[in-house]
Image (tube, rainbow, N blue to C red):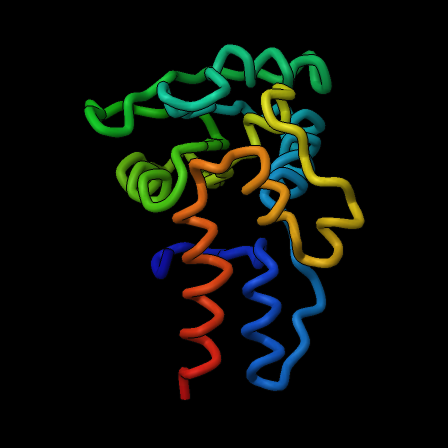
Length: 178
């Protein structure tokens, strides 16, 4: 994350950190929203896309490609389903890469495939699942008040440890950090 050219404020916890230090974060941008904007630009500019899908996830690269093609039919999309625990090196020749492995696997994967052809590589977490309809996104009012984490917990109780760390542990660390 520290070697990225750009990090986006996605979660509500980042907004809390800004408040803790007397500042206001003007905008949070969820990964799915940014991904859709980038796909729109890609379609308008004939940029090629590579989907790196977690083979153990809900949405395969084929399902995700089909969902994107329903929105942008002319977009050139390639991809692979990749086992995040047993990953052989791959070469990516597309200009845009979206990876849904989750933290920290997607960041490590993105770092391992860097080359001069790739213009943008982005870890998108659950965005593939939203696009394919495998997961329903929280209603707008729930997102606006910062409770999307609770929605995700209801839909995916197995994520409780990640949510615990984000909702309880992270804020405690922020509060007590000088």
